[in-house]
Length: 354
Image (tube, rainbow, N blue to C red; front, side):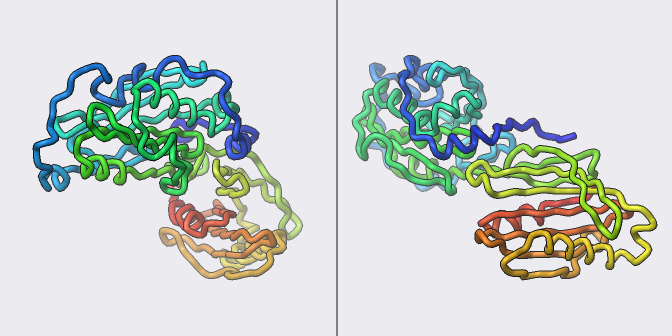
């Protein structure tokens, strides 16, 4: 049983969000910020106190504290502990539930909001989702855009639109970041460029979350909710029935992160633990038909339990890393296939026996 409630997206939707450049045919009539009240502290028609003559003290920045949310999967620097609230907002006529973390004080306004897009919203297109919010904000608040309507940038490798505008002589910055199926809005408004820059630049996405398998007796960090299936593999005249937990990457659908486990018998261990691990690994490498083998059975261990490491490259340029562990009479195969060696290493290192 997994510990965290994941929001899985079918593979067809994952592919569509990466490729789609559709435009919304429906303009959002309810402003995102007006509806959920998390963007700017004041409407354009309301008066605002003039702090332009006040100096910006270094303590305003150095006294800020890091804030992280495991559930929201982000970290940022806030001037104080943010309050949390939730709101429902329509995006292209589809209701979305947002969670907002916000601070408003005499230095300005600082907020992070996020929502997990539904498959229906994803089908409308990634660019369309960002465009609708971007256009609505700019029109609703009568911004004077300083760098165009949504400069494309990246935050932690994820596609981002950045809008910079002015409102009541204050600087306003909005970043809309699409991290897999999760959409973040990072917002700040202040008469201090230093404060806005500190907050916006401090935002970081921490997407991988722990997954716990009670039946499998392990925990591991995964980029998305996994699928579970069974797989049968032949070995020395018998068949092993594996339970396979596999997770994909939303932004790289060809990547795979999986844990497989099966229970072996005393007969399977007659030749010794090392022989079993080496033969299973060699069998796996043979089935992969790799372009090159980097590690072929390097001895490793996990909490004192024996293991073997296998690393290879595929013909399409991906890296495959698999660790086999024998814990009592339970055999684990922890494997990843990806272009990013950091993701593979992070996945393999996160595996723990419970």
